[in-house]
Image (tube, rainbow, N blue to C red):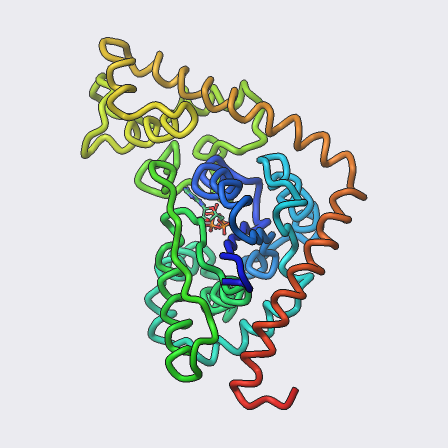
Amino acid sequence: MLGEMKAVFSGVQPSGNLTIGNYLGAIKNFGAFSEEYKSFYCVVDLHAITVTQVPAELRRRTYETLALYIACGLDPAKNTLFVQSHVPAHAELGWILDCFTMFGELSRMTQFKDKSAKHAENINAGLFTYPALMAADILLYQTDVVPVGADQKQHLELARDIAQRFNSRFGDVFTVPEPYIAGTGMKIMSLQEPTAKMSKSDENPNAVVRILDPKDDIIRKFRRAVTDSDTVVRFAEGKDGINNLMTIYSCFTGKRLDEIEREFDGRGYGDFKLAVGEACADALAPVQSEFARLMADKAYLESVMRAGAEDAARCAARTLNKVKKKLGFVI
Ligand code: AQP
């Protein structure tokens, strides 16, 4: 709780062009909290540099991610939208929480194992301690709810453990956050390797549908999606490709899985893939046009990020001061 209100926090890394996994698993669900929660949505650029970034691209994607937040329906008047590095309290509490996070806990994080396998040349300390910084992001705002995709569940459990560990030593300093993982949108898989998560940094362009992809590309990528040798549109074990496409179709149309099975009964995969592509492109079209309008007005985006950072810094300072006092720092 932040004062009288419940708080929600989430973030997206500006580490690539955002995918429909980021959209369905995270951003699309953020707006639901705006009315009743004090809402903080952050572009987490400090997290992005755990992997090598090209500076000009990181800068561009930071603006783009903020513009996408707004284009996806987050009204800056009702949501605090900001850039992580604009609020130094994140890095400061991140360091403090490093000292309350165990080496063994961090070693068990599957994202660390996956990313260090993928970036063997750059297994840096930040990649390892990423979950402690993520805990700081969340705990600074006395967050009650964190809307995330299922891939972030393990990090969120660690944030809860860190909060409880700190609270049990120093009293009730942090709200212990709960994850909010949206129904079928929880984990969108790669279109080319449907047992692996769809990731914005995937190098295979056909594996990933991006929020800003033109309609023709979206349709083409779904047409090429890996399925199976069966011909029935049915959600079942061993049909990872079809299960993923059904999940995506369900998220974009609101149809249940059994309704989808009935709709495509007796029709081939070709028809189904085209329908998924069209539903996806149609749903993203208004987001894309709003995004283009916003990106043409950098001054507006800068005013949003400045106001957001001021508000976030004010709220974060209250928690950080409390933490410092508890630790015995002279403030
Ligand atoms: N495939 C996915 N399905 C559902 N949710 C997803 N999210 C990411 N991919 C999927 C959710 O999007 C939010 C922001 O993710 P992030 O930017 O913090 O980083 P990530 O989880 O590491 O996402 P990527 O796309 O895989 O980025 P890269 O390639 O840079 O590592 C989170 O809530 C996440 O759960």
